[in-house]
Image (cartoon, rainbow, N blue to C red):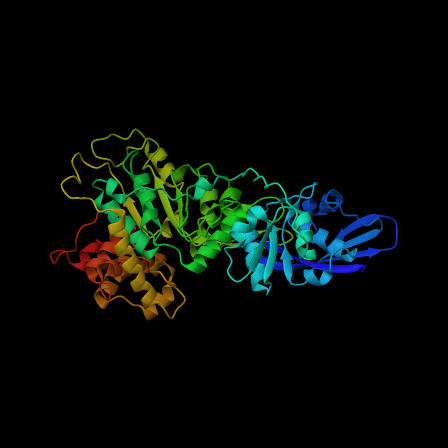
Length: 525
């Protein structure tokens, strides 16, 4: 049979596209031509496939071979087409029954000796194949664990091209040496949630209240204070307050991590919200994604449905930090290339931590700051106003006084997480018909129209807005935080004291209760 087809998957960002691989053997001088917008790594498949076929004991056709990848307008990158190209070629040569290739997607890179090597993005590609109607998929054995995370599709983990051909021919499976895992360029420790407990944090009442509200409503938070005051301790313990991911979110997060090369060989679904903490010297592509050829997900996509923690935020390049502005609003990031646009999910909880000044002592009691006003101004402006305006909660974290917190037993992570879970359940119930689940996700117009706060709270925020102490975006964000505080308190609607507390959390002023001897109008003075 001079013409045969096989199937594989192309990834553009996290979106998978089915690719039909056609192999045609015609009369003519021996030559292999690959068409269909292949990149360099895919163009080299001709030599890899030829060597792998010959070293697997099969005969490579000594005629003119044309291999087409369709749709031809879709850019194709990567080496995971090798096995499907080899199978289509051998089916065209009559070695394999082409009918057995019609309902199976094939993913994998070939070594020159015919071994199958692991590839990135196997989970996302398997998910795309399943959604396209395929019931079976062939992947390298090292990728079989993550591919089996996709429900409703049969996964065959193969060690070599010889085993793939035996499967297609329905003959005895040859024995092969176990595959050797390739070294990973990205450490899985980047996504490891710190195993720490909130019980270890003594004092810091305002800081604990702030991260509880942040976890309950998904609000971005900015912690600033002198070195050693506990900013990083609180940020790391925020991860433990978040509930487990839903099944759909687990599959989506796992697909992103698979494409980034963060899943281990004995892969399991990512069930805990990831905790990503890039260094403040991180480059722009490492944060938003990129790379040569088809872009890969960056740190903000790996933090999807979890926490992105940037310590020493003013030390990060301002332009790099400002790239967070668009994903903070939209929940996704687009990486544009000449050939295609890759879109990655990026709905994360942003946690920034910073010292108050270069020396770290500005605004602290009993300490003298040595920074000039110009240096102080310049340092604070490294986090731009638009970024700060997108952050719902700001807290100054000062060193705990000696003996503070020892009189009262600090709450553990489990105790606070239970309140957070109940608050999130109230939000999910309230927004069950909208498509949103958290207070931080509700668009401002819908929030004001469908979920208004009470009249007195509304007047309070209007007074603050008129006095210039709130922006239009800040008005909505205070309302969202007020709803979160109401959910934590079990209140049906935000009250004036809760709204006042939300404003204090937003602006970073010390938390003080609103009493009857402090009229609303005095807040705007």
